Amino acid sequence: MQDIRHFVNGAAFEGGSGRFGDVFNPNTGEVESRVQLATAAELDAAVAAAALVQPAWAAVNPQRRARVMFEFKRLVEANMEELALILSSQHGKVIADSKGDIVRGLDVIEFACGIPHALKGEYTEGAGPGIDVYSMRQALGVVAGITPFNFPAMIPMWMFGVAIACGNTFILKPSEKDPGVPVRLAELFMEAGANLGMDLKGVLNVVHGDKAVVDAILANPTISAVSFVGSSDIAQYVYATGTANGKRVQAMGGAKNHGVVLPDADLDQVVKDLSGAAFGSAGERCMALPVVVPVGKATADELRKRMVAEIESLRVGISTDPQAHYGPVVSAAHRDKIADYIRIGEAEGAELVVDGRGFSLQGYEKGFFIGPSLFDNVKKGMRTYQEEIFGPVLQIVRAETFEEALSLPSEHQYGNGVAIFTRDGAAARQFASRVNVGMVGINVPIPVPVAYHTFGGWKRSAFGDTNQHGMEGVKFWTKVKTITSRWPEGAVTGNSFVIPTMA
Ligand code: NAD
Image (cartoon, rainbow, N blue to C red):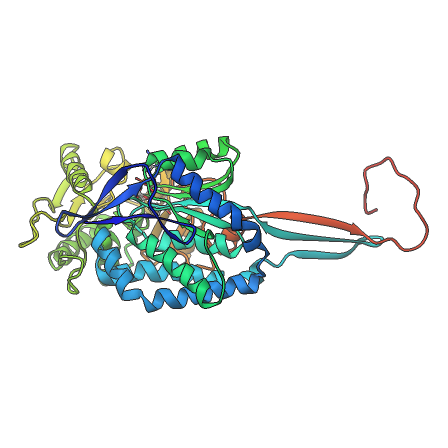
């Protein structure tokens, strides 16, 4: 069996913790490899490597740093099939969706190719007599990213793409459930440097592990910033601990995104959009749409009828089946947790219209599969409505009015994404303006913003005040220095004991 090792200072790194985690193939339910789990000692080695090269990397001019990103993007594209296969076999998402995961990460790398422009500072000539003021954005130093299992390519690239382009060196702690792709990305990053005649050892390091290494990252005094994406309780813990230790932290958490359907919506399109957004990637997306809020009884009844027919047409299969709409979930424990939520939903009085439990795929009986489920008449107070299920379960929460529909996502503990489906521009505009959620789609079921905009939710979906990628990412991974300079001409001026003003 293959071991997945840390990647430190440009090479595989054995480490001495002696601790390993199992990496499963969710299609077969079998362990396909083991991943090393670091302790603080392995982390220290990676941080030392990153710290050693950081000043030199920051001194590489931004255009050359951008060229590394161009070359890295080219290499990832050239290795797309291999990367998608690794991703699919460890995560369980179908190949086309695995490629989407990689491509959305590459979009951020493409944004990072424009880093010279993004890092240009500000300048005021003549702010006072002989005085010019300018500001510059400088790298923070050694920084870290801690990522979830559900986007093992995109989310690491969100983080290290921008951070490294800004002149930082990086420690990536990927999910221990699907760590294969992050290591391949780091190898390709080294290759990108080598192709340009640059030695990038230490610029991007991958340290695998669980809570022990996350705690070591949060305690390490050399690491100045931490970006985290995962579930909310852990995001809050990472935010609280990291900031208490003086670090800059952004920590994205869980989600429960609502799709509001107004009576005038194009239901044919809504049903297609909903099935992709609720069941794609087996619902394991923080921007999935697991809650649909039809407004009015007629809309709800019609939507439910069509949704049942749509669900019957869905094909659940192994992740390499090109006909499959979605594959297995990531682990047996996660499948059981989803099944448990379905049981709780029934017990708390929601109407289980389609039950995905008990689904089994011939020849893959040990795989972590679960069929699509649909609940109707889900109510606000129910636990299955309040909590994130993160599986292929769609919940219909009926609303009488626009105001009631607007209040549901607005009052929910999570505020990652939301969508409204309507043909009424004024209603959509009002909804977008008033809803208490960070990312809004208007007839767009999964409103993940493009890379040069920025990604981030509200409420318990994000801790900290700076989003991922776009100019918010550049802000997060840099600090501003402002210089006030005077080149006096003429006579010496007298001393002054009042605060300088430009008056
Ligand atoms: P998770 O919180 O279990 O793990 C995230 C990371 O934290 C992993 O690297 C993991 O090793 C580490 N970790 C696990 N337990 C820890 C602990 N006790 N202390 C410290 N670190 C720990 O999340 P997951 O199951 O990998 O990912 C799914 C979750 O991520 C969902 O809640 C989903 O909504 C969320 N997510 C959010 C976004 C977003 O941008 N808001 C994006 C993707 C996923």
